[in-house]
Amino acid sequence: SSKGSQTYLFIHFSFIFILFFEPTVILRTTSKSVWATEFEPIELTCLIESISTNNPRIEWKKIKNGVPSYVYFQNKISGDLEHRATLREPANLLILNTTRSDSAQYRCEVAAIDDQKPFDEIVISLSVRVKPVTPRCTVPESVTVGSTTELRCVENEGYPPSQYQWFRNNEELPDDPKTSTRFINSSYVMNTDTGSLKFRTVKKEDAGDYHCQARNEAGYSKCEAQLMEVYDQDIMGISLKVLGGVTALILVTVGLCHIQKHSYCSCKDHRENNNKCYVLFYSFYFYFLQGHFRHKSSFVI
Ligand SMILES: *[C@@H]1O[C@H](CO)[C@@H](O)[C@H](O)[C@H]1NC(C)=O
Ligand SMILES: *[C@@H]1O[C@H](CO)[C@@H](O)[C@H](O)[C@H]1NC(C)=O
Image (cartoon, rainbow, N blue to C red; front, side):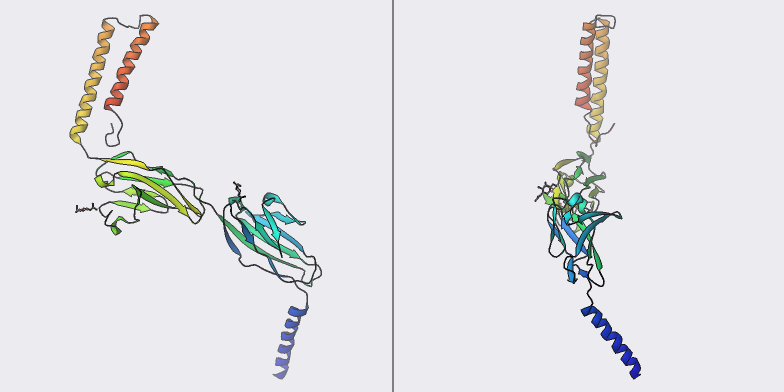
């Protein structure tokens, strides 16, 4: 047993000896996973814990999709970080103005030829936050009471992916209308991940100016407010409109026949007269279209 403990002590002291007296290069970093915000500076730390070589060789490589490329090589910043980064004591990489394409893994490599263990490396993962751009918002112009409708909001630049928030008349809609006395009668379902705002049964009070905001840790962007009108289902009104439209159509047809008969313009006539005839016809046509069939989603033919 005493022989066993002697062996143990020997190994133990040998290890301490190697650690303290054998020259070894050891690297350390303050963070192996770093977040930066686009257009702001970030420093990737590569600290040398132990070394005995005076002029170690320092290199940084960027590894994107498994492909390494030089960032710092032969004492110079190279590649797409050129003019945007510097090396700081002892071996830190300072990126002055990060861009979204800087998201990658970075490997700090230190070679110290006079050391017993002459090489060490550490890998740091950098993720760049990107502010959302102005989202594309889709708000129906008009809907009928009792119908179902969906408002959409989306943008694809933000990183991490945006969260969405909807506003009506500049007032923020709660994620769940049941939680608010103000929106308790509304039937919407909001998805803050996809930007969808779905009304199961549109109410008169749902009308208003809607806009949406895309947000992440880097900032936010919003779209212009768009008006959503809510109409009553008006059977009588629709019938009258249809009747009016049909009447107009008949009048136009009768009018054209009349004109043809009195040979004000006929297909056999001169070109000039023919043009007049078309102008007359299209004037009627557009008047008819705009006056009676202005498209509303509550009145679809
Ligand atoms: C960072 O780069 C962007 C374009 O790449 C530029 O518009 C911006 O002015 C730069 N910011 C600084 C602080 O240099
Ligand atoms: C919700 O509906 C109830 C019953 O119809 C009504 O009394 C109340 O005033 C409504 N609340 C809002 C905020 O519109």
